Image (cartoon, rainbow, N blue to C red; front, side, top):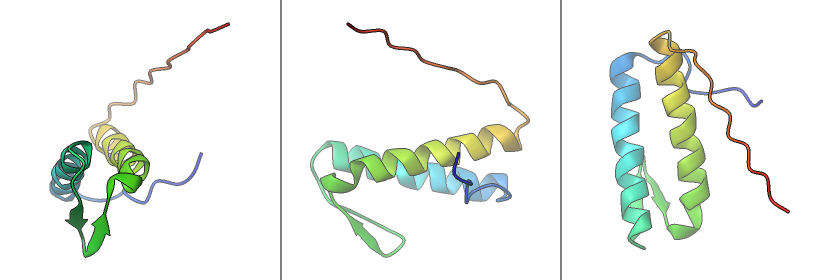
Length: 77
């Protein structure tokens, strides 16, 4: 697993990042562009935004001592 660049940030910093990335995700879902931290994002960046939001949410869980893990399994075929 890749390292999480958001580990060690304060709860307030993580909450701000979560709100920013949720807003970006919402705008991109509506096929709009979005600017975040000086970087212009487009719908093509949707996977990157979702991955980053996942890292932020993981950091929030760890900061709150919530270490429960969920595993999703999909059987097809």
